[in-house]
Image 1: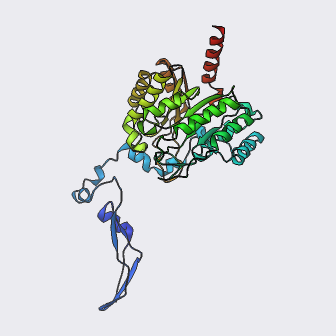
Image 2: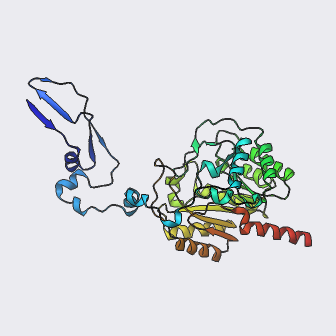
Image 3: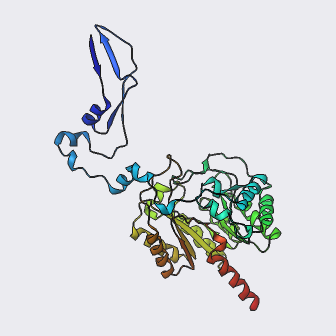
Length: 379
């Protein structure tokens, strides 16, 4: 009888990134009659480490991992969240009231779908007029698959609810919000990308709650700038569209149908169509971007007249999504806020837990809009 055991550790030392996968670790062969066993398969793992040839030549010890790849592979570091990223569990009477209203009216919110860490802060408190809920229209399923986003994806999501504009306006009126943010999933399956549905929602809100300021955070409509015009002329107050990250990282972070230049074109067109609109965008930090790339992004945004920019820390929603490369310090977020304001942005919200719609109604944008309205009345 010949008995042998194949250990994975030995094979890793021999073959580097080549890994042995076998469901039978101990095999017994007796004479010419071998027991039947499953086929042993070899697969190459996506390992950035030394190659087999480098092990043979003795150069394996000199191999240096790319610093960004090393950060992504550092599982222990990713588990240790910095103290500034830890938030309390959502609670409070107002939080539960808003949550119930959203469920009763069959609405979706990006606060819940995207697992925003600020949901307790934005929805909590005793005064609904100070709450900020970002309502997600056109369903809860997106036709795109960005690597940072936890929203469900499907090529053929359900048809839009024709009552959604009316129900959304009813919710906003019921809550007594002074400022509301409307966002959407990408609906590449619809000829207009959902622009008319979103525009109708804005108009309904303005009818039922005329004092409420409306911000829309919409997609790029596959680059159809005529649909940008539909949105810009809907009566909204703030036109938001996120570039998400710097140009060099865009193909790796966002769905390939969403390009950096296309996003800039959307923001530029909205401003040209209705010059009085405040245009707004957001960037995530911690994806491996360099200071030079962030600086260039800010310059690109100012070149097209973008008024507001926000910075927040990328947080990995699940293990299926991109890993965090770096946890950016609060001091660095303050630095980028100063840079943005020095470049001429009207307002910049910048912090580890800031999201594009974080407490938007309490921000400077609301004050700017109200000041503009009072100036018009005085004139």
